[in-house]
Length: 86
Ligand SMILES: [Zn+2]
Image (tube, rainbow, N blue to C red; front, side, top):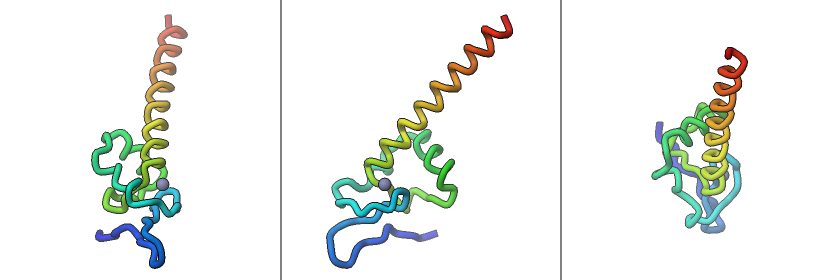
């Protein structure tokens, strides 16, 4: 599907499809080099999102933190499960 990022008519900003904020084009496009687990985190909450929709830097950062937190929790859960089983 071809859904380019919406551009504002009166200012040089790009609307983030994830958070809805209008951001400078300088803060745009970070999703292009992003790790796969970040894309997975985005799609967890925005199943309709495709890379072409784009995302602002702040969202990329937030979803990266979310992915890392999920990994940390998963590891802690495994350790706790092993401790309980022992
Ligand atoms: Zn955003």
